[in-house]
Image (cartoon, rainbow, N blue to C red; front, side):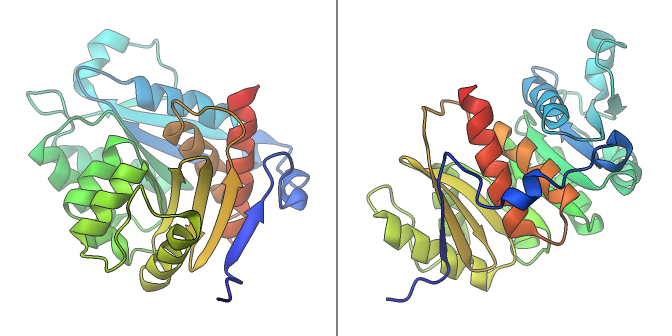
Length: 269
């Protein structure tokens, strides 16, 4: 079978070296990222996304948190904005009034997780995705909201899901995808399934299966072997992906492939 859509990246060397040497030298030209996440019981993921995005070379990063955290954080979290929250401490639907203008300021948005489980937050995210047309990266428990109501993202351009294999399985079930994702499937069958999935739908996917990171973009699949244990990987890869992608908006395959290489390197250093 012809698998010309399968591209292999070696973990020791970035496949697209030219991107490494053409990054903006001035931070004012390095792009603006908006990170959204957090709830009353935690904001670790948006805080980590903020730090890792800056490390990845972002020009400016701002974070939106539920306003229930404002008293706790005060001015301790530079770059933090606060939006209305529900009585349980998740984002309220009225937070859309803050999300939309901040997203218009940014070059890309990262839904970083720690969102909790709240029906009002689910409505908010659905409305936000309907209105926001820019680059959107979704990871951690933010993906769970998308799996519950996947259709707004399936044909949305410029949408990246950085998700666990278990979440990929649930997504496949939710959309009644003909090729089931199973832990027992071999790498070639997984590559074929991701090829067909991203030819049918516009979303882009980064996932991990056994010792391989897989990127699927518009019917092309890039595999990169994992060179060290990755106990916590999704947020690291999502932050890197957001920055490399916003800095190279016309080259999503090359940018996201390079982001994977950089995230692997970041993990072991």
